[in-house]
Length: 352
Image (cartoon, rainbow, N blue to C red; front, top):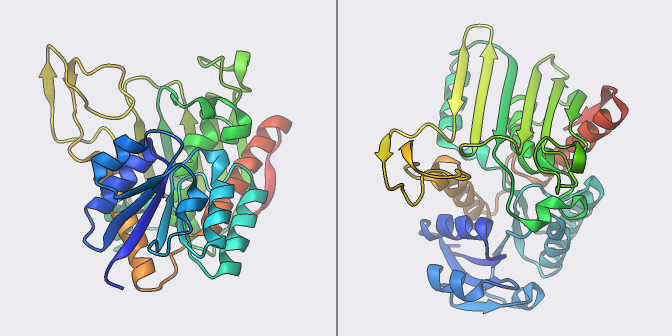
């Protein structure tokens, strides 16, 4: 297959960076988009020839090979099931679903229909973290012992992020899902399960630090222990001002790796009138800033979606970390973290 024909479900932030990434790929062709609003804007921006409000209507097209699911968390389940029923391969944004039960049903539906389900964990493709893979593989920091990572910013603007029913929780499922998925890829490798988790987080609404209109937590920490003995510390919060803060630290017997995914720009700029944009989630762009060079590429989106297109072109299954199994494990772990927080106990199990 020379060209993979793409249908986009959704029209806002995630849909935009999916379109951006596909537009850079000579093997991808944007065919159609389905969304309840913003259709004209996204179709015009990315020159998408067909659009409609109903995604099931779009799935009737026989010129779509791959669907990108870029809608709020609670809709992932229904859209993926409909795509699978229509025989379409699927890329689903994080989190895979709002519950593990829904995630399992999505995996089963795709397997029953013989289509690929690909989980969009972009950290597995971020250039800095791919370089980390090679440094670890050559023995640069010895045997891995402990990893800590976070994604934090000042809160989502989406109305759906404020409700547990539509988000699945709070900042932990919305942001910490990235380091959790990366830990499964880096340390789990499909054979080293997480066996113990401990979670501590705010309780939502009046118990939050800042966001008293969010039903879910605006601050959360979690500790994971893997079967082989490695520990991980994850953080996801909505209390961090100054822009999205994504960092990873990896400690080994012979060295340390530290990665800054979002503030690592080589550009420094001082502006009195202010810039139009520097990085995601900044309150303002006055004075000194470090404007991102190519944010979508550096966060891994471009290579992630290139890889998923190639999975369809070459009829290959995605690797562990960006497949349905890893997406399910992330949700199961988030649920275990929430259980730990509610019971003030460490939760034991086997998650992979």
